[in-house]
Amino acid sequence: MTRLNVSKAREEFPEVVNRAAYGKERTIVSRRGKDMAAVIPIDDLHLLERLTQEEMDRLDLKDARAALKEAKKKETIPHRDLMRARKEVYRRVK
Image 1 (cartoon, rainbow, N blue to C red):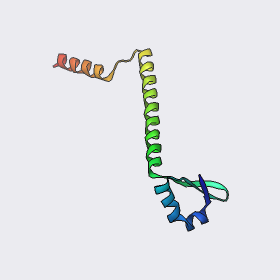
Image 2 (cartoon, rainbow, N blue to C red):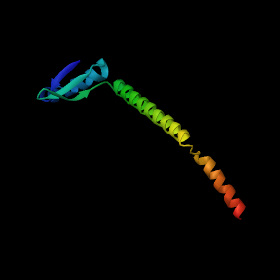
Image 3 (spheres, rainbow, N blue to C red):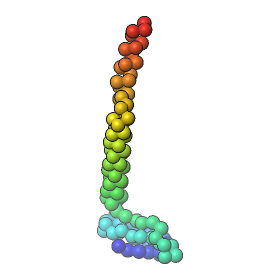
Image 4 (cartoon, helix red, strand yellow):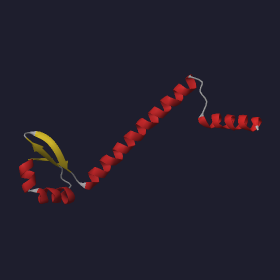
């Protein structure tokens, strides 16, 4: 992996982009010794986005399972059942 300071990256930007696009090379851009950004191949970005989405989905599923477990523990009823019961009550009242 290549590491360039901002000034050098600016000078070589077209080449850095070409190396990422065609050579699949990753370049880290730093300022005063601190990594600030990276130029990566678009396939790497797509992979990163897909993995991020999969992780968010996994966490959502984990949270949903925990919520269902808590609902069962507290003996709550599903929303659809509540709505059915509500409709039944309204039918009786009319």
